[in-house]
Image 1 (cartoon, rainbow, N blue to C red):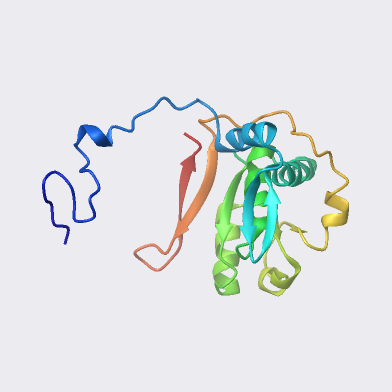
Image 2 (image 1 turned 90 degrees about the vertical axis):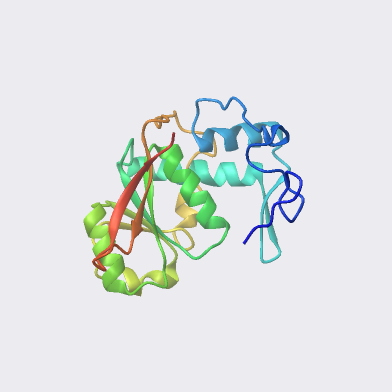
Length: 196
């Protein structure tokens, strides 16, 4: 329950209709990964990520995502191609998602805590040709189709890809990701979300 007093909620924040909450602004007609690229160009040494004491700058994140994007393009990823991403939360996950977008594709996030049959169903249903993951997930993905790219053990090969951005292919009207829900029948269902 939220108690309203004097045009503000109990924490003192303005109500949605208050003029002091007027936050509308023009937003550029670009995709999120392009905004990250702009930030990396403007402040390459600024901290972008902190995870378990490890930091990654915008420049490092952008270079890593670019290498992943170039590698994915060699595997046929382009506009609206679906790439499964089965990673624990870590800096590689962020770089992978950005890399998929920079390649022009859309990601399908997969939680490694799911049973392997559920992961196999989602990968098959989405018809992903590529799965980005880490070596500890190999057993979970043994029964799935498509190319597996292990961002930890395959990194020495991926790191030879250019650190520069590939030619942009994704546009705001392209798919950004497909989120699977449990579905009312218990069978996962994919919801397709565009960049815009």
